[in-house]
Length: 316
Image 1 (cartoon, rainbow, N blue to C red):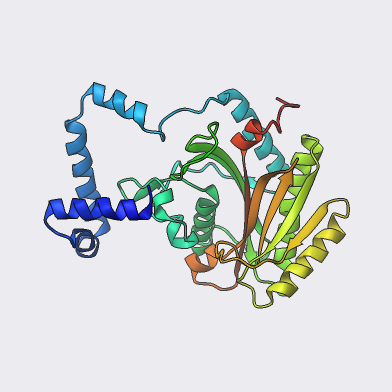
Image 2 (cartoon, helix red, strand yellow):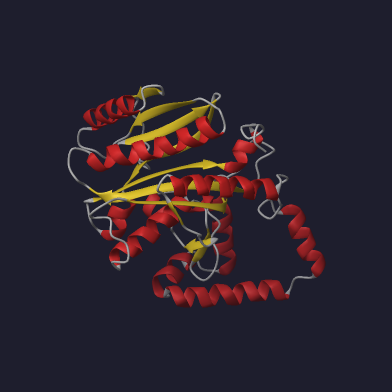
């Protein structure tokens, strides 16, 4: 549904309700708990009017509830394999909830809320585990249960995420298994955290795709805004990675875009001509904690995509 179509439907609904300012009045006059109570009552009223046949019809027409055709056993085997490799590489694993606070993606990462499945009780279905790992880290740093001052903290997670946008490939469903790693630390000067963190992420993917799966990978570094000397920053990171991994092909893309999701660098990893990894530096922990010294690197790969593209045929 386009934004224009959505606005037309909302306008029609507000006209039927007899109050064109209803949404604004509800969100400004009511507290989050009051809105939750209202939405729960609304959901209960809707379900009370449904029959078992209605539920079956909804299942038939709703793309978000259909199961994937991929093998759940093979999927779990790959998830375990990746988490074990991540643990061996210094990334502690976290078992995330399938739910996240409402706005976890759109507030800190500027993702369109329409691409997230919003729910009641101030929640949404988890759409990206890196956002939740960032929130988990920020909460721990704030409560002093996580210390990233003396050394960086590295985490990994796998979970089934659900996204609202339509996918053009038939094999893709609205939910998929996502493997992610994140690194949190402080600004140490001379891009010290950035160099160590991105090298650690690249090393993991080299261990996984090349050593474990036998596929050569290529890395592209895309320039992004967010650092004062963005050209100098990407050049120094590029130089550091080439020295660290001389047998790996690195390419620098200096074309500027309006993308404000990543800060300084967005890196992408291609395997057999297919983009399988996306990552980069983000300012999420800076925003969550109000501390410009915070640094965070995120990256991830879709496990379903590895199956669909045949990357795992040799080991599964």
